[in-house]
Image 1 (cartoon, helix red, strand yellow):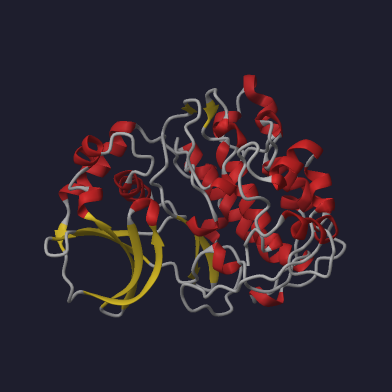
Image 2 (cartoon, rainbow, N blue to C red; image 1 turned 60 degrees about the horizontal axis):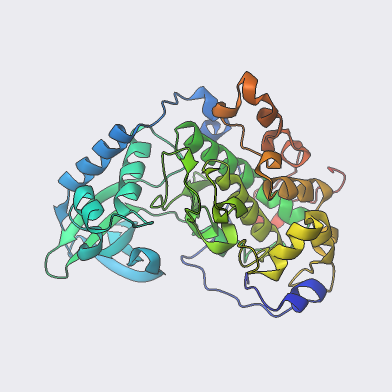
Length: 396
């Protein structure tokens, strides 16, 4: 699943897919929203995060580093590698509780943010940025992040461990292997998750944080009282800077907004909606739309850029289907949402309804919000089980 094959196979016929083992055991889980989730982020106090506030959080985390206790944390299994950050994530047990443990060489993360910045001034991935932001998000009770449980160092192995709460249902990459198959019922299963994702990222933006590495792997799912809650992780590429310098390319190739490859400054906040468009596409199609958004690199993206997203969906075939195009599989409203999130022209791209766009001089941006699209407004019917979401024929 989610593998890019030959261009002809993707356009004109299905190809075999590779089934992936999920990171943790999954059970059928209710999709729903808690009362806390139903409250809009605007109802919460949103004070933009400043560089000094963030730095205080990073420095405090470094000052609180504790010795690693191998008897306290018992390894259960390896979860995944993160080569970009020289680390791996392991599932461990602390007493009767499972936790996620990111293990990094101390020579990489160093002993503090100052040491890291001095040793790696040009690093794109900044581990202390991740630690500091999660700490701050925990302090304001941001519901869409995992809990930072501590930072530990092991002198014997020369390793540093960042321990966090475990998201019980794995990541969206694993979710993509689940039923139902692509179509209306799958869109109904996605709808409440998409709403949470948009709210969670909008809240980050209102705090002044651009994530810049949103992906299936960096959005987790956790069962909270029978409802699925999304958790956004891996803030190592995040920034508080609104404007990025030219060609400051960050994130995974499939998810990068096309403007990051241009030789001119761009809006960091508006790159995240593009990445979320790729996330939703992959969730709905069980496949990526393209391999890269860098010009003259991927024929799929070149086709979409040249002929438009609507024609792209008409040509692109469902990987696990019987030859049907994605235009036949996706509902018109969902296809319209994707087209606006994945717009190559940032002026035409949907935003997430952030406060920064709700001004008289930027009023046009507010009208281009995901919350104004028909797919987000339509009343999908749901049941208590992920694999048994009722058909929503007639909702479109």
